[in-house]
Length: 474
Image (cartoon, rainbow, N blue to C red; front, side):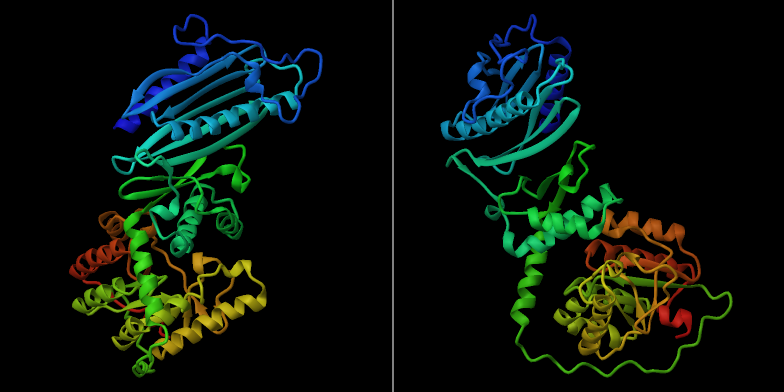
């Protein structure tokens, strides 16, 4: 509530100031001699600061949770500047933040003078405001957003400071998470968030941009339960939107990922157990006419714990499912995959590293499929008959890849997005019909919980749960 109240206060101040200007404001500073746009040189010497040419001074206009709210405002016939920033009453921190804020004001002025022409105040402006979030009593993040208009060109910018007010230190991502260990996970979560907001972007382009730009020093907001990464939309070429893309990631999810990664690394070099014999090769009988059947399918696994819990649930209802597994995860969690195969569940291919096959050369595409299939066979003794292309991406009309039948779905509750068991289950129950193929992901505990609800409800309605292979009579 405090953050929302502060944001509302800042927005109100900003709007009021834009509407009213400086006249009559008791706390506004006098505005002094800007370099004029009329006549003379339109640029300053390289080392000259525009700010040194003005008499405008910052004013304290309030305080929130121990952080002073400072305003710098200046206007003339040629431009308008309104900036809000925070001060902690800690000399080193306040100097650091003020220097960065003023550097951006100065940069705006330099840009304006470099490209100077006939403009009005409404054509050329810079506004900047911030929000704050606390991690603990001493650790605070100030997240800034600025909007700049210069001769019809709009520029949006964001940056953040996370500081410890007791030590006077600036904090970085590594101070809160194992950044190097978790980077791949953070890139994946960020790519999904960006593609959700801008589905028109190419997936590979987005991932490459995030991977190249996500660093320990990147802008972020840290709170007790959540790490929020900040990306400007123009990083992805979306300059016309003028927004900051926020990617909230649960600290629990990060810790779980790191734990699984460590377990997998520790298990490397150990002698694997002999996989159980492959399931019987006889062809199941297709469901009889009018038989109520449904296929539950699970992508992206196996998962060290969630898949085991799911197998327990399936056993309770004598239900069979189809697992489309990623090859490099099959290598790590072969034991749980072996259990799934031994208990009569179907195991399908989801490529070796969850690659978008439509973005690969013919050779790389074949390599992803065959490497995934080999990893599955090595892990559980099953040669997959089915393949589910990651993201459902396939060539037009493609029904088979490397001898494996392409398998999509007709019920998608977007469990990766909502992570709400009841919502996911309700979507499935309201859309399923006999012969439906349901898409879920056993990477998420919430999806396993949703599957439990679906198993209970559909079993009560007389449904049987079969594999895709059984449904299609393979």
